[in-house]
Length: 272
Image (cartoon, rainbow, N blue to C red; front, side, top):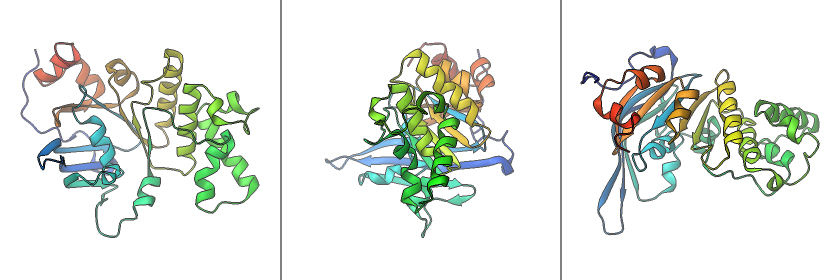
């Protein structure tokens, strides 16, 4: 049985110079139509290390996806949401006055649970963001599309069908295409919200291999219900419950020697 540790889950093992994302006393609530406030996140402080994979685990409704969405201000899209505390990217408060939110979302890309390729060709899906920022050079677009498809481990499967509709790809291929599309605008951080939950085991394995291969070039944060997946792909894991951060530690430590009984109960299947 783990010894209860009352210290804060504040990532003290991470050197300050290696911190990419940080939350400070972060709380998030929603006002319902009846005026009642529902809490999604409660006083969360943690640091996420640069160029590592961090996983968020916990039962449904515990706040994993809500926390993920605070990192690129997706929570702004819900007018009923109310956020307090701070979220910092490379030391800068992302809610500070004057922050360019579209640029923030380029720096912090996001991939959702269900693949959402655009109804256009494979090529144009990847080129979309580049065209949006004014890139018109055909050679540069060609090179960038190929490089991103290679980075997403998809090039060999689609190189002969670049101008076919992306909607004709399998679910796993579509998800890797969405990742390639996100990589095209060169984000610093990639957020993945249950990226393999709708995929078959073979496609899931390819997504996991892709996540591991990308850790050398950007910071990744993944939400997953699959604890085995978290153990396979992540360097650090945060366990959340009822909107609170219960424990945050290097993945090996959290799964083999959790400090808190609640963590042990969850990872051994006693609840959740």
